Image (cartoon, rainbow, N blue to C red; front, side, top):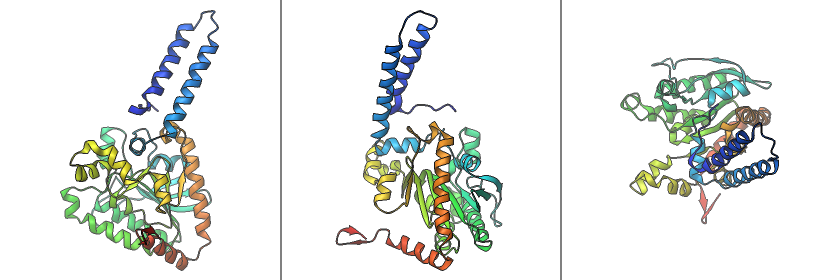
Length: 322
């Protein structure tokens, strides 16, 4: 897959181009250029390590949004099997921004709910750029209730800039549909695991994210608002998005320190878009580990622990989070 370089990746791209030019120039010539080739290759490796080990919050946001990054349906293809999509909320329509259905991961049959973006204009329009409508959240709730009825765990993939804020969505009560999901997921008597695989934006993300275990990919982010939105409010201009991202502490490490996520899933060096298969294997291992742990917990205890977990968020005592 073509992975367009981000601005901060250009030093790596320039060195790689220089190495390719050298190899092409020396092709067929009886010149021993191995020391020079090795020197440039080592420089590429050091530059790559330096850049990716010292990413800023804004750079991670850019990686989380990369169009070559694996999306939900890619993970369903690579980490799950036997996916059968189920359509419609039985009230209004089917939301293509939030596919869901039955699938198998390891030894578990489960219900999967996901945000889905598109990589090209036509697909992005069809998927509404990953921003779900009210019917998407109502479809998700229908599938979660089905999972509870048949004793199936729920796995959700979060990757959205936020719920769709258009007039139609407001007319069909998008805020109410998300609020109902928050309430119902809190008391769902079946194991639930949510994975933030890219963008985790606002209530649009939380509408399928109230889970026993919340996992996040290394370069994903999870926040009440996008960096651009925060910059527009606080600095009155979107150009301050990088500053906002840093101040919001929206990265995986900060979220884990705050207790907002339960595990960080490592990504290949440079981001999941550089190796879909390796990223899918890491995600599969993490999800299976948590499903196996949750399977042993009685339903009533599961609900009590989930409720207590989310009640702790934002609670402070003496200036320290509790």
